[in-house]
Length: 542
Image (cartoon, rainbow, N blue to C red; front, side, top):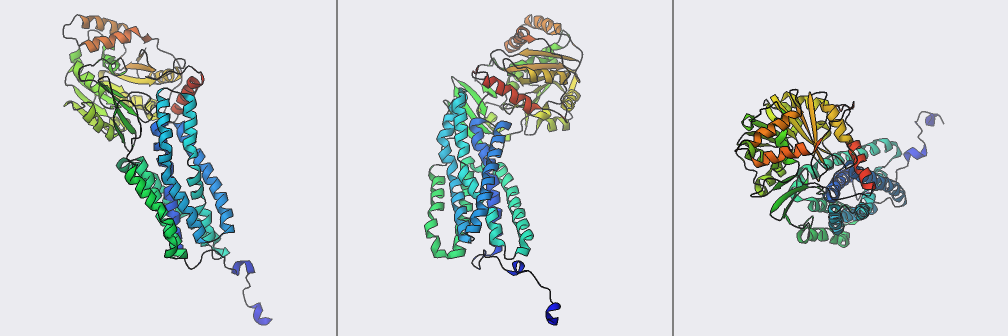
C-alpha cells in the first residue's frame, strides 16, 4: 500500500487509447488530407460564385445565397461526419467519403451547364420564374459534395485521437490546418486558376487532386491492390477535362467571344453590325462599337455634354483632357476623341482583360488614350493630372462600387478637375424609384456648387453633372445655340446636348450624405431591384 501511495494514479478513461487511427495511416498524411479538403471546400465556394455569376450576376443577394447554403451544407456535414466517425472510425471509411465528395464536385459544372444556358436566356428576357427555379437547381447541385466534404474535419479528429488527453491539441491542429487550406483555396481560383483555366477546369482540377488524395489514403490504409475499384474516378474526371470542358459558357445569339478573367465573365456580341460588351449576367451593355456609327442613344455620349454647363461662350477647343473611371471597351473615349480631337484621355479600368478585349474587338487603340488597369479611386488619388471632364461609369451590375459614391471620393474628384472642370456620373434607377439618384445628388452637393440631372431616354440610366464653378442651367442652352452656328461642331455633340436639354430633370434636394464610413449602396440597390421585379412590370433593361 505504501508503494502505491507514491504513484500518480490516472483515471482509466485517460489511459485508454482511442480506437481509430491505425498504423496503416499516419497523422502527417491525415493533416495533409484535411488541408487539401479545406482548400477545395473554399475553392468550390469561390468558383461557385463565378459559375453562377455568368448567368445570375454577382450581386450581394447571389453571394448571400451561395455562402448561406454552403454553410448549411457544411453544418449538415459536421453532424453527419461526427456520427459516422463514431460508427466507423476507420481511415478507409473517411477516404471513401472524401473520394465521393471530391468526385461529385467535379461533375457540378457539367450538370449545371444546361440549366445555366436556360437561365442566361431567361435573364435576357427577365423571366423571373425560370430564373428563380434555375438558380435553386444550381445551388442544390452543391448539396452532395459540400456535405460530404463537411464530414472530413470531425472524421479526422476522431481518427487522429490516440488519447483523450490530446483532444484539445488534436482538434486545434485539425481546424488550424483546415483553415490554412481554406485560405489558399480563397485565392487560388480567383487569382490563378479561373483566369488561366476557366471555371469548369478549375472545378475539375480541385476535384481531381482531392480525389487522388482520397484514393492514396485508401491505399495507405488497406493496401495498394485495393484501390483499383476507385481509379475510375480520376479517369472519368480527366476524360471530362479533355472532351467536354471547353464548351461555351453561354449560347447567346450573336456571341463572337467569351472569356473568364480574375474579375468578370466577359462576353462580346455582334448584332446588326454593332459589337456589344457584356459582363457577368449580361444585364446592361458596357460598351458598344460600330465601324461608322457614333450615336448610340445610350449614356456614353452624354458625358460629352459636361463642360458646356460652364458660362457661355464655351468652345470645344477649350477641352484639353478627360478622365474616365470605368473605361470598359472605350466607347466614351472614342466618342470624345471624335468630338474634341486627340485630347489626353486617362481611362481607368480595374479588369485588364476588359482592356485587352476593347483593343481587340472595339478598336480601342487610340494614341491619345492611356488605358490604366487600376481601381479608379486609387488611380485618381495617386494621379497628379487635372481634367476638364471627369466621367464616372464604373458599374458591376447592379451596383456602383460604394467607394465611388462617397463625399470623400467626390472631394478627390473635385481636386483633380481644372478650374472649369465638370464631374459627370452615370447612375442606375428604376421607373419608380430614384432613391439612389437622390442620395448621390445630395452627397455631391456637399462638394460641388452646382449639380444637374438628366434621364437617358429608353433606359434606366440617369446622368448627373457637377461643375467646379457655380453655374446655371441656362448656360447649356446658350452654349448649344452658339454651337449650332458653327459649321465645325460635331453632330454627335449637338445630339448629346439636345438630349440633355430635352430630358432634363429637376435637381432633387435632400440631406442624405454617403461617406467612407456609411454608404449603403447594396441595400438601396437591392431594394430598388427587388421592388421593381416584384411589381410585375418587368421589361428588358437597356
